[in-house]
Length: 340
Image 1: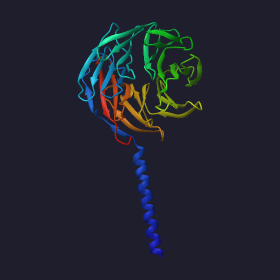
Image 2: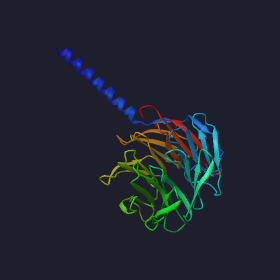
Image 3: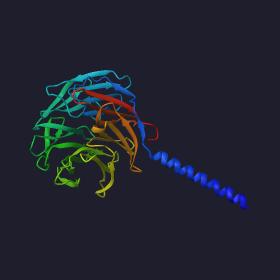
């Protein structure tokens, strides 16, 4: 009896140690060094925006020019130059028919993907436009940017007429670095310096503000925003190399995620909302975070700096864009491991 009890206890101890060892192994992030595909982009400067079409068949990249790629073959299908020096961001409309391309000098091109022609040219910004986003119906477009050493600018446009319907400029202390519509299109988020502001789209009124702490020695700047697919959470990435995930219902901070070396320049939730991808240009990585555990689970090591990220609609691929000053831009596709 005693011998049996001892054997049983020893067996349980071995199982327990094996479980602990397995958890320790799982706690280390998976490192992926080689992209599934590297696009021969030909971009002359760093790629600052990437976006999948809603059906996942196309990938667009923004840099000195905008380009559209066939995801399955890697072939370049279209190049869009326009009259600006280049583009900071790119977004597909929800129906996949148009691209929004914000430029260096205050213009936004709405480009018809099928005809390869300009649909609408939106004018009204001063200075650069860093970010654009369509609402859920594709009828409205938000844009953010601003001139040097002046308050930032955020505008909402009605695309059917090309008219600016809401200007929310005076509330922003500096450049508006990022704008994002909630999945239902009812609220709009903006990032300017260390502030995240949440707006009612219909009324243009401010609903709430989140602050990222800054010191007198150094101003913090929030560069990236992303809503979770269910609209319950908003993630922000800043110059303090931190990602804050905010609970919009309680206005509380759910996670503060750290792991990049410097600026967080882009964020993207996976389609199921369980993970979050981030871009950190200075450490040449894109990272994926588990939002159930709050842990870093995957590190993609890029050959160049990583400035932007985007999930494919099925969540199986992650696109990254970036580059190195003087050596042009690069667009990469990475396979996201099953289960992550």
